[in-house]
Image (tube, rainbow, N blue to C red; front, side, top):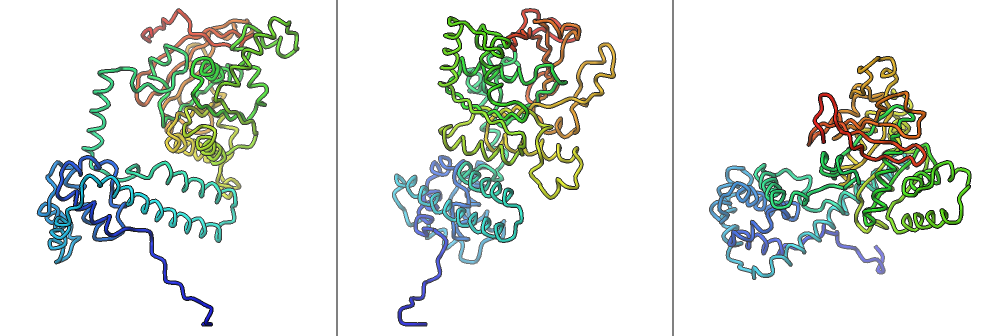
Length: 462
């Protein structure tokens, strides 16, 4: 080694041994401190293996309603057989450090910072290794984004095993909140009162499938929901991905829904000056909204998830309230290698599962439009009512979805009329009831309105 070379000392993962000791001391001598941080702190906050073991024992005791002190923690570690002959002595030393409990929050922030830095290093190593070995650049970028997003969005206890009593406590708190304010936990309102009453709003983390045969109006229905959001909930962030319709056509339909000007007038440009003022007013509403659209015929769940993460972190300001995909069967599988040899049914199963994962990762409802199989057209009479088995190409769609809704014409002979009845049938609802809702569809304005007549044979009125 030359005189100019300086041997660098090996780098250690970020950690603060003293801060770890202070936090554990506070937990050992102050039962309230444990309860205050029970939901946020876990063993990953600690770098020292011994401190990890102590934290795990403390959290186990606290979750089971047992007092936390030197004796109970040592007993728990002994039962786990994860300590050593000096464990009791070390616990006693920790309890005698007596740091200022008022600074506990600051100590925990130090541990959280170092934990995040350690995870960033691990993610960086994983990304580097993947870059050396992968032959799928797009897949590697998607995996890297997922790792980074997962860290930024879930640095606390999400994804960690916990005693069921913790979940039970949160559920009871939810019940208490709902009892005092039934609207407190409403999801995203669609602007359709009956639908919102049944669903309690579109719930975060939910995959919602809206299925219909071609030309029944599934695209128009979701655009009506977006149009309602533009009019009533301008702060909501919505992302729509269309795989078969240019964004200009999407805008045309929204404008037709939100104005008294029909699709024919928009298509021909025959709009008088007075009506043009209405168009500009609706255009201004669009500009004030937080609705984003992308029209690309080749889409994969990974691409859509990537766009949504960027939107949420950027112009969404940390929020994303709804994702709409039109439609599922036009999507491609992210797994390029498997795409060459897999069946379409396998592809759709993978896509469906990835959309559910995306809904949970982004913590917002995802509405995916879906085609139905042609078998429904071969049935007669009342047997033409849509069934879950009619979902095209894969039963996995039914399995992954939290809610499945079907759109169908009440009377096929009405389809050439300017106004007709459309039935929305909630055929699967993981956390609620099944209902049918009758809508009046105005063709010239591609507008859905809930009908005053909601009586159905075999279904209660909403």
